[in-house]
Structures are given as structure tokens and as C-alpha cells.
Image (cartoon, rainbow, N blue to C red):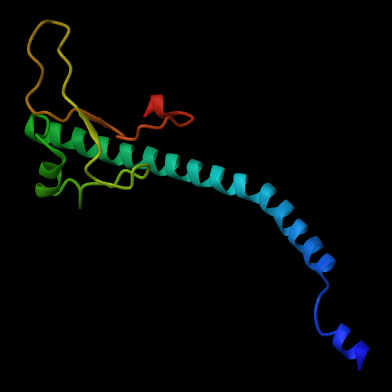
Length: 130
């Protein structure tokens, strides 16, 4: 009867060894997982910016002015909806950049959205490009 009771459960040492193995695996896997998430968000941001900038350029080509807001791109069906910033996970944090002044001294083109940037306060590997 004593042998039957001993075989039902695990000893404290066995549980501690298993927990140590699990902890070791987590210390190896967790940083890679979070790094992968960051890279995926940055790739999504790059793609979102390419698509949105293309919509801004198409709007400018069609109307000879830049849009007043991202909502105007949605209203005119250049975008289905205002894109979500994958870093902040919100659609209202975009930093909208106005058209730059022209080199010849003429005023910039009409409209207020020439480009956009992520509103994230963190810096990624290559956010300066985007």
C-alpha cells in the first residue's frame, strides 16, 4: 500500500526540475517572440504607409490638390476606411504632414495631407524611413 501511494504523484524535486526546464525554455523563446511581433508590426506599418501614400498621390492626380484629411480619402473612396496605425493600434494617432513649400517660391499645393507618419512615440529599427 505504501508503494501505491508513492506512485500516484510527483515528488517536489521532479516538479522543480520540470519548472526549471520550462523557465529555461521561456527565457529563450519569449524574447524571440516579442522581437517577431515588433518586426511584424513594422512590416505592417510599412505596407499601410505605402498604400495610404499611393491613395494620396492618386487623389492629387485626380483633383490637382491634396486631401484635407484622411477622412476625405475615405469619403471619395480612395481608401475603404482610415487605416489603423499598427504600432499604436489606433486610427486617430497618425501625424499628418502638409505639402512642403515649393523651391521656386510659389505657395504649396492646396490641401493639408501630403504625407503621414506613425504617431508612435517609440522608435523602431527603421522608422526614420517611414
